[in-house]
Length: 71
Image (tube, rainbow, N blue to C red; front, top):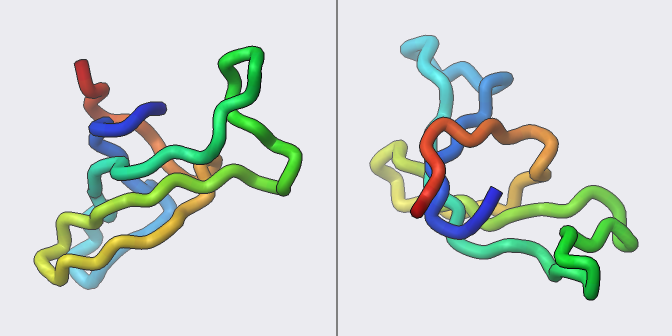
């Protein structure tokens, strides 16, 4: 997962039954090994949700699925 990826939260279902979809805006810190640091619990990414409300929220990476990777 990286900045610009289109993600969805499959466990969320809105009133229409669709999955929530958004774009990754910010990533958690990366360690010297190039991997996401997990020393502070579950790493979270900042997602701008495309529900028309302009909402951004920090979401656990484990809850999200990449549906279209940024180049």
